[in-house]
Image (cartoon, rainbow, N blue to C red):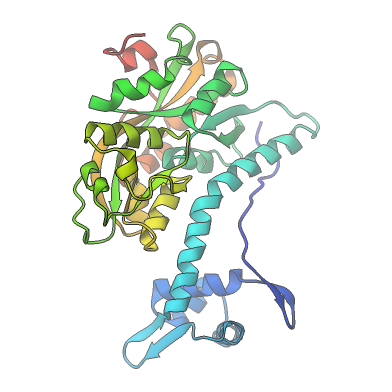
Length: 363
């Protein structure tokens, strides 16, 4: 059964208490500024936004009056560029979206499921609890309203696996680094990953490393550089697997967390880490290569990670799980994941036992 409707939640900026209009939304001017930044001129931005040239200038002039500063800088034969104020507005908007969108997507999915249950002929959908990742995000986009319905709640890997153990979800997403750090991270999950009860669906392999400013002006080469007093770090939230991996890598590099400036500064997604660094608030942080690329940052690879969905063996042959596997193995989805920067979709959709996936780890 497919969803009868699709809910979405989006953050919105408001200027509160403007003299003429009270609370004034900023989405129109932000969309216009973003289009000008992308096209390099107002005419191209108008086409992208579906606005008349006159209306676009009206929007810009109105907000320039409200802010009391220029939003555009126009030079003959050089096109139109954003003022420093306008650039900062866009960066702030990107940071807000990077930080809030996964939470809003999770809430929208949860609300949709609650409303769907009240409709006639409603049937339960699969429940996915997972840490945020681009392949997970892509899966939700490819599902759309197709069967089986998939309810998503973003959780840390530990929270997701604990939910699976309590039967509060049908799939639990988690990631494991390959190589030297595999055993340390796997030991965190051992209490929940019972080989006799669960199977693993391989989602993707991804490249994780340090994000740095373009050109790497601080000459950061690895985790040991986080001990330098001139390097500002931004971390993932408490409880996340990436934060735990950071701690393990720092220990391996002989660096105490007390030496790391910004260790307690937290963001909740790879995109939020990238936005934090791209806006100049930190020099480096750890995340997936895709996010670094999307924010124009340089990337220093550290580990490859395999991302899995854990499922109960008893759920494998259910029609809903078989439908989901078919979507994950489709050329459309595998092709999309494979083109994500830093992602490898070679084994996407592969079923494995825990012992097959981790033959050198004691189970």
